[in-house]
Length: 173
Image 1: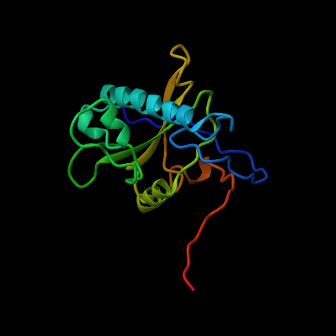
Image 2: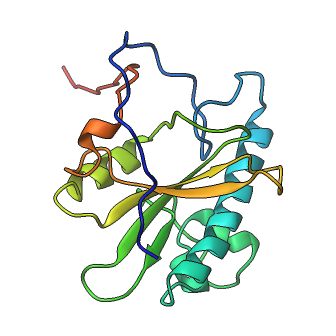
């Protein structure tokens, strides 16, 4: 099933500073969560995303999971968190790439890391790079997986509002 969630363009608003680092979570979690809690939320989100992908994409299987979290369930390749996505579905030169963001609540905000931004920008001209948002990840009765388009692509460009935050640059004198 290749259906993106129905998003509406966000209202114009003030840019706010982005929340602190959130690992694999959706970025809307309270700052009081420990690193271990954020990691567990991200891990659970990837597990549910794996199940969702296997139900909706016949080509999805354990080798589709490419982040380091795969090593907690599957032997072999330990995974790589620097790819800019957590799952690669399909073979050949045009697989679908899915970045997972999980949240304890209803979602509404995501935070992308450096490799995720770089990969999303590289694939902005296609629908290959996508976001899977897993909301209410620790509440099975409310849990939902929604597929969102690439914020840098034509399909998603007007459906997100940049919240702000700092970009860091290195330089050498």
